Structures are given as C-alpha cells and as structure tokens.
Image (cartoon, helix red, strand yellow):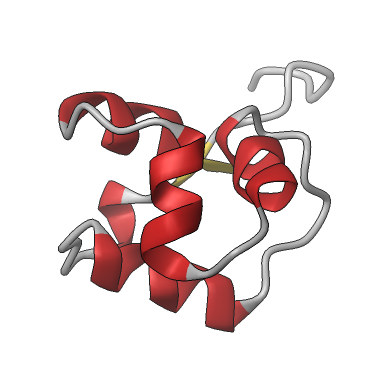
Length: 74
C-alpha cells in the first residue's frame, strides 16, 4: 500500500498541520488526516500544494510503498 510521509516531512521542517493548512489553503482536517494516514485518497492538487509549500522536489520524499502485513512473504 502507499503511505504518505507527510508527518516526517512536517517534523523535519518543524511544521504542524495548522501551519501547513495556512501555507497551502487545504482544510486543516484534510491535512491532519493526511498527516495521520487516515485519508483514503489524495488529490493530485493537494499533493502538489503540499510539495510546493514544503519545497519537496522528489515525490518519494512524500509517498512510499509499504508492503501489506497480510501478504504472505515469499
């Protein structure tokens, strides 16, 4: 599954969800859900706003693939 690393990116820049919301124009609750990986879908527009606001140039700084724990190991 894909996981946002927004919490790490915010922590590295000493930002909280409220500040990111102000910087991007994205609702606080949306940023918070993204930070906690509670969002089921991320809009490309919101991801772009976050990347621009946090000066992220490589999407792998924001999104990572994590193998589901239910998948049997080979």
